[in-house]
Length: 64
Image (cartoon, rainbow, N blue to C red; front, side, top):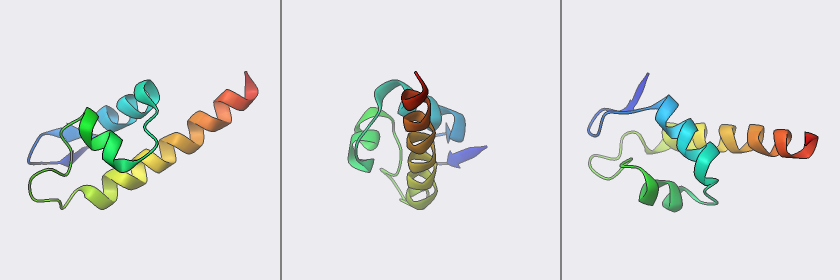
């Protein structure tokens, strides 16, 4: 599903960027992929996806 229509960024792209780059802040995610840099309507959803993915990533790191 597209989260950012302005830049054609999907939830999958956000999740992949979070898995790969492990951004600590939303600002770091915005620097990595073109999200929330035009109209900004996607910022809340993108932040929720980032936080969800980071929670899952931490869970997997604790298992390993």
